[in-house]
Image (tube, rainbow, N blue to C red; front, side):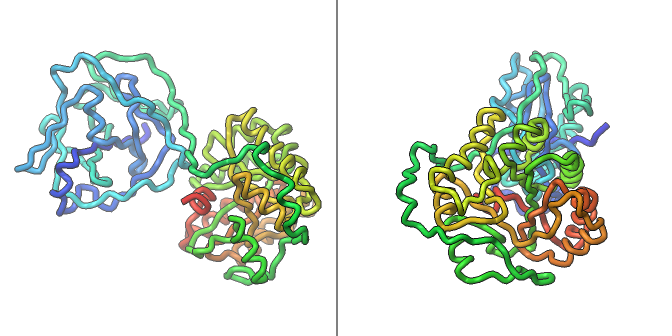
Length: 420
């Protein structure tokens, strides 16, 4: 059976009492795609060393009493004898964050948690206590269902509801996303039409060299080619113009290591591989906009730029119920006009600080070559452009992830870079 942990939370009145080490101080609490239920009522849960954790404070909505004793610094969890119904917590969903993403670090506390008077491992997390739901079998029976990725705790004497799987939450953005009819396309004719073909001089182990005007232009229009803070972090992005059969392997490897990534899709890709796009979304990856027809935006009128971007975003909205906030100009070709239109439509334009010749399926160089190129030019804050039609990229991806982790890198999400 999969490990399961339960997290419980205290009242804020106890916050000032935390001075000693918690039972599990230092443990990393992570978001997860698992679900937890008490008598089939869902309860928010988190991953702690592959166990299912819940907050103590949440238990009061599931037929339990949570009593804090100030003198002994203990919280005692018991069945609420007067409870005849369970209200549960409304709107419980799996988190929008990718499973495995850190949520919090267990801190120090002198408070102990008791289950019917028996001490149980506990975790102090952001001012509240967590426990392992697996240890709550003192109140009833427990079951881990691997197919449903769900933990079930059943308490006799309390009502049950009918089981229903919970959905995955969508990230909420504060950025305003203007509809195309609000865009005054005539206003962009005064902006520069000078074409920029994105390129740079690569530097081994460091950021590439770019012209000063390029950096200034990008920063003026909320565009990125690198994380400007230059942390020991890298961002994986994949361009999807058509499907060559390697995307499922790439998704599986990314999911195995809980590595976030963004897939920039054209309109053709959305039409030809909808099941893979749905899989990307369901697994928590970001789907970006690579224009409807893989158009050269520097040659487009403002009206055509809007149409190219809208074509992909409208399909994502109408067919997948998904909203994207990131656009990558095909071939890395853009001008001030296209950057301005994208920004006003609510997009960050995403370029890259690493790319290599990987986009021709008939001209692959082998995994050794791919490994050497990708690792040799790895650098702080890198945004990688990789093509999913490359067999080399699919076959070397796991080794690249392992190399990055072994060398102290973390994998970041564009959501954290552009929308902290």
